[in-house]
Length: 62
Image (tube, rainbow, N blue to C red; front, side):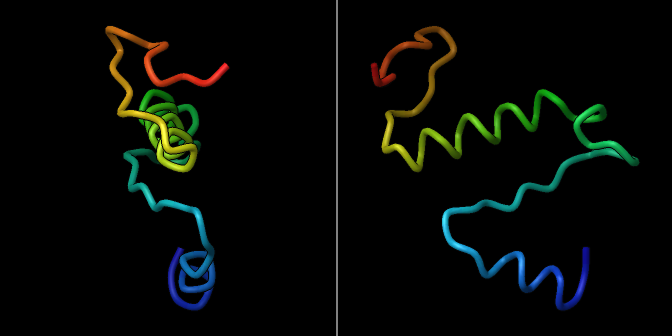
């Protein structure tokens, strides 16, 4: 995405831009990276502590 469309997308609130490796279908080429980016974004928006895979429920809300 380039130009005006990219500028418009970047103007929104509560969003993050993540560059991912992929050719055509990013969800197939980079599923783990997408999952991590979503997990980190949701944790940041919710104000959770940093995610630790060894303790997946620390900071989780009921």
